[in-house]
Image 1: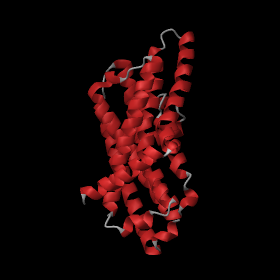
Image 2 (image 1 turned 60 degrees about the vertical axis):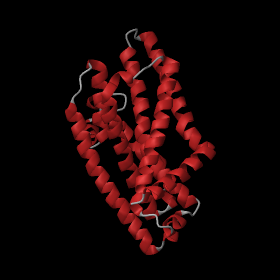
Image 3 (image 1 turned 180 degrees about the vertical axis):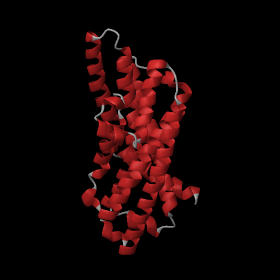
Image 4 (image 1 turned 45 degrees about the vertical axis):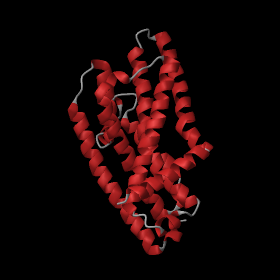
Length: 261
């Protein structure tokens, strides 16, 4: 594995980001709109519930931390699609670039973009509503790490589907991650979900993190068991999604990379 090849892939997509209004709007515009809509809704709730500060904090935290999952998967799937749309995948792998280097580059891009979007949204939440979630302190590290792992797992799985079935399933790049959001319990406890949905939520790593976020907000206490369960599930899903992606990539190689377009 060569650092300069990983850096070259990262640099390529960073140049693309700088020159693409679509990418810039995805990184900054939509998080701002979500914050404005949900923030104003929270302010409206406050007019009926004078002691609604924790409710507002829970909603804002859900929006902000969901960005981590979203960016983690988005950068994997949409950057893959970018190569497919431009018929550039063949060019990438005619070079000495290895599959592992390609994957690592996507991981770094996901971290970079997640940091950019999250930091921007954090600033906007403070400027618009004086919401400051920095009180999580050192808990930020496991929360963000586990959430981006969830995003990676979803991203690798969707990338495998796109390689296997081509751009006709490209809509999965935007829709599949949304399927897990109701079961991740971003703004509400898992306990209010129907029984069958609670069962599904037990297998969603992010649900344990958002439950923990609300517990920290409500009591200030940390339950490390939720972090451990989320880490275990994330590791399992990451391994399975990477194996699926590798298998899909091998099938595409056998057919010829041109077949995926």
